Every structure is written in structure tokens, then in C-alpha cells.
Length: 372
Image (tube, rainbow, N blue to C red; front, side):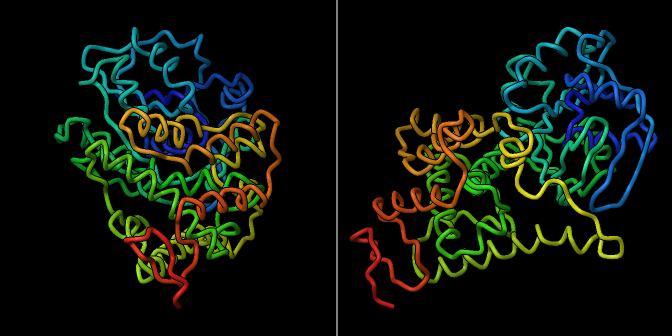
């Protein structure tokens, strides 16, 4: 089977590379001309948590793609999903499969373009970066969740599972829609940390910031609840715990965030025998804003939560304010800095959100009591 990676950057490039190293017939397609040229002329170089790799690959620019497509992994940024779908739609074979290897609600967008029965959804929970034309950096290992949009498990589901397992642990779920929503909610944490030039772990060292992060995620969970979504649970994200404002729950929430911070910190230990200086030090949102100087996916992550909240009548004042701050940063009307978190925290306090571990929560009053 011929495989096409549509968007050969961080996420798609890593998945395609390991499929190619596993002996699969992979073609990389990317709209960044310099990257496609580097892939053709010098091959793909990977560094990071698993050390250095180099492989020769087949690469095309979109205007060179004219061949039939049997299996496409779409890994473009959310803002390019529609153009990627339009690109591949006329080239798909009758039994073609399209996999959305993306964050956001992009599987349903692709389904509207190429046909719902063709599309599988995923949640890629590993991180990487396209640091230069032809060069990727593998930053944090993590699983991929995979599923059919209708909850079934088919032969093609197992085929895609096998291919993605060449890169990392892949888990088939009958609730991929719920898993996608789970990451949408969780990503409010990530967007929050992009309000300044710092890593997730640096931001979350502060207990106030951990509780602020919980508050923005709690608000996103309310939107999922309003949409009737059954969210998925994992070591870092437990929706019932995140809904709970009690002091005991807040302490447990802080510990769960510490587990996530420890997970992110493991990348340094992975190359202890050969120290490696990572280029990407923050989230993908941070990477786009600080390193690539381009708009992030915030409009399609937190922005999408805000839009769906509006449609459902679920208020999202914290996520709305946070997204607006990011847009202002992207447009050059706001500077990155810790003061942005201070501003967001003041709003959270006015909304009655608890930002301390030491006070009790009076559910009837919707406020902290000040009783330690």
C-alpha cells in the first residue's frame, strides 16, 4: 500500500519517517518549498529523544501531487485542513482511507470534504518540531489514540494501528470523538502557557498557575458536557476531579499536573549519555508564536471551544479572554509576559474560581471561605 503524508512537519514527518524505516512505501507532501526540496535532495534528519537518524525519502510539493492516493495521513495545521482536503479529494481511490493526524476538530472537517466513511480520527500525544528544512526534532514521546468516527473497528483500523505503532504506542478507542474533545479541553492548559516565553513546566511551578490552568480546563469541560460528550480519562486528565472545586480535589489536581510535568521533563534524561540541546523548549503554540513567528492553532483549539460554547449557551469567559490575549500577541498588540497570567488570574478570581490550595470552597456561595 502506498502511503502519503500530507503535511511533513513535526507530527506527520515523525509518523511517516518511522513507517518508512519500517519498510513502508511513503511519500511526503509539504507546502513549504524549502522543506520539500531539502527532503528530496538531502533526506530527512531526525534528532531528539531517540537519538539521530537519517533516511532518504520521496517528497513532493502539493502542485506535484497528481497520483492516486490509497492511504493519506493528513498532518497539516488546523488552518490548512480544508485546502489539504481539497487537494487530496479528487485523487482518492474508491477504497481510500484518510487519517486526521492532527489536534482539533479536524477529522469532522475532513469528513465533510472527502466523505465521512473514509475518515479516521486520531489524537497524537507525542510532540516534535520542524526545526529547519529537512530536519525534525523528537521532543516528547507519547501515545496515539485512534478510532473510526462511528465507533466501529474495521480491517483498515487495524492497518492504521499497525502503521502508527511503528512510531509509538497506538490505542484503538471506540470513542475517538470523546478523546478528541478531551484533548481540546486539555489544550486550554497548553494555550495558557503560550501567553509568555516559557515552558509548560516553568509556568506550572506556581500553584496559582496550576489552579488557573484547572479553571480554564474546567470551563472547557462544561462545553463538552453541554454537547453531551463522554470524555476519556488518563493519568493527567480526570474530568470529575477537574470539575470539583473542593480543597481535597484541588490538591489532587495539583499532583496530577506534577505528573504531567514529570512526563515532559523525561526528555532530558532520555539523552543523558549524550547531552542534546533541544531547540523546541515550549508547547506547539509557543513554537509557532516565539520561534516560527506565525499564528498558532489557538483559533481552532481554544477558539473552537469558545465557539461551541456560544452555540450551546455555555459561558466561557476565561477561555474567551485567554484566546483574545493570544490573538493580540499574534497581531503584535500585546507582549508575551507573566503579566498576562496575572491578568487572567484576576478575571478568574472575579469569577469566583479558587486559585489557592489552602482555603475551603463554599459551593453555595461559589467562593473560597478563607478557612484553612
